[in-house]
Length: 135
Image (cartoon, rainbow, N blue to C red; front, side, top):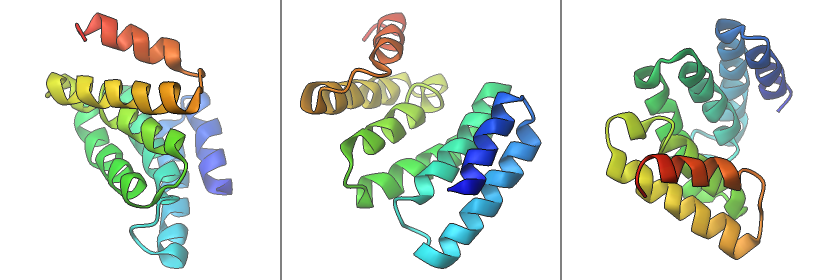
């Protein structure tokens, strides 16, 4: 988690290449210690994907965000983390090429996280995206 935190700081400083290096080092350690399909890999995978998205490189982001979604759907017990992966893999990445899937994932995140868990952080972002894309 420490290298992922460092990656987040570097993204905030707009040092995207350095951030991805940090996320990748953390990912390699986690894969070695936890296995290649552990839900905790989602932190680093989302970090890499988000850094590409912020730079405007959706095509590079998609594989990382889709993998984050896959590992979190298979092994994450905390629904808000699964929902986050669905939202990141949906509107932020897949949305550019496959809007129906993106709308489905964003709507699923909204229902799952906000209705079931009563978590409101990020709800405005999801609502705005859904409204903007006709969902």
